[in-house]
Image 1 (cartoon, helix red, strand yellow):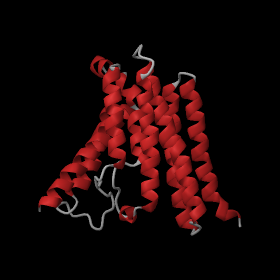
Image 2: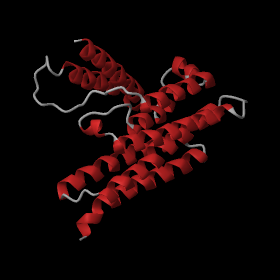
Image 3: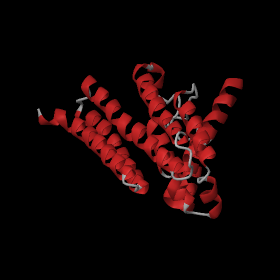
Image 4: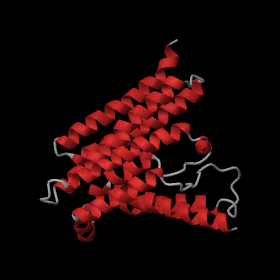
Length: 230
């Protein structure tokens, strides 16, 4: 039946957006690469949503989704970071550190497929979140001389790539944005995530995405510590 192929078609559009994004980056247009990640993220949401709605989820779709995510949310952000480092250093080897993002994204996706603990929350930073963080750094650099200087430092960029590679596979439970009820006391960290993300986007637009994701990770870490010590 045709409806069985609709989710896979949406996943294929995710993959196509990733490939087009890589072409943009290779052509020196890294901001357009970011736009392709935004577009792919929409397709990535829709394929799962449509599959559940049509009740046509299957193993083929699951594997295709991981392969598409590997290109769009693994390889593409690695190329964006590579391009940023390369344009700010004369060291011909240093930019290749960015490819760790692609390698650890593959590990992250493989781990997600076999880790049953991630049915109700993520363990480690999801690849789409990491890709959005990295791809929106050029927009942040345009906001002020401080961020432009910081994001023009190749050592900082390499360090960021190393940290995010680690966080992709870290045993860090991230806050699940699923509300069982809407009481403030039980959902304080969820409300903090939503509130800080909204403020970041209102104040900075696309450039606020890195702050929103960093705050999400930080709040998740704080919640994990409090829960463990409770």
